[in-house]
Image (cartoon, rainbow, N blue to C red; front, top):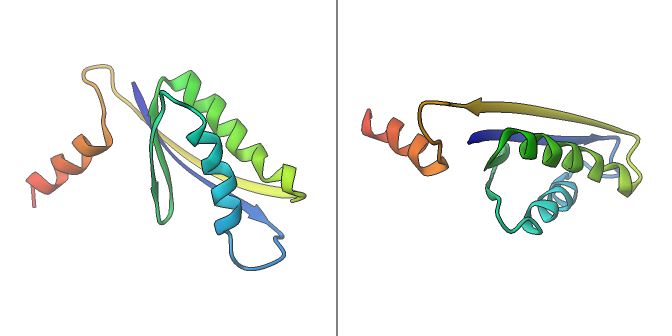
Length: 99
């Protein structure tokens, strides 16, 4: 299991606000019944198999083009461990325990 943080930024939007474009990308995740994700102020964290995450990232990236945007910059970070399962809550708990 892997964890991916993704941030999809359309360039050249009609206004400075990006929330409607972010919502379009997140709607794609809402359709995925077996994918766990969490929207954060600076990106979206998704948990799943690596190949599936990469496919979802591509779909999210392309979602802005369907709205007429001509350029999209997407940042992806992937954390994958083979020794234990990763969860969003587990990663947060591990840091809080050390505070």
